[in-house]
Length: 257
Image (cartoon, rainbow, N blue to C red; front, top):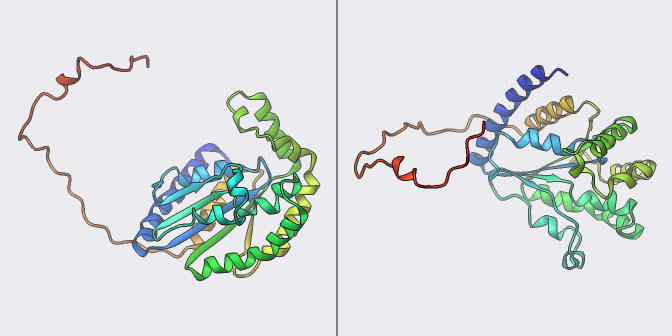
């Protein structure tokens, strides 16, 4: 997709996200959107496109680090529950409790028994979220082997992208089919009519971003929230002084551009 066409379509969708945001606040909705997928599938770019024009107080992004020793001793989903939305919030998980079904299982950070137990209880946990009034949307970004290899090589070669290369990226290349089997088992256990998985082909990152935003807007019914008319007030002249002149003795960033 050409850059100009992408930006034009993205701006239209982002305007709708702003309207959705006002509706979520007005109605007190609670929404969880979680993104999973292979390393290099484009989760970060999709989340950025989704959130760059809206308020971070309404659209909260949660990307948890590896669990601490204390968190490892807790019930597995406990540290995620602390980030669930209150009324008027949309919480976006950049990876989620499904880490246990994917990277933790494949790389040996949990036992097969722990993974199997997670797959057994996850549907019940998500039903409880629905019963509490939360709207839950689950997206899996699927990238091809060839495109993942290209993106990883770009991370290795480009100094501006090297920070994206995590310790799990290279092992994920070597264990492609292990991740595929883990994905298939996860879908078999947790894809339901009430809490379905939506798969997003992401070799074309621009189209993937547009498709995800469009789909989210279709999944959450929204209208036009009432809004008070705002009139910009004139600056009061009482206690007026030359406030610009008072800054002249202060330190300024040098003008170089």
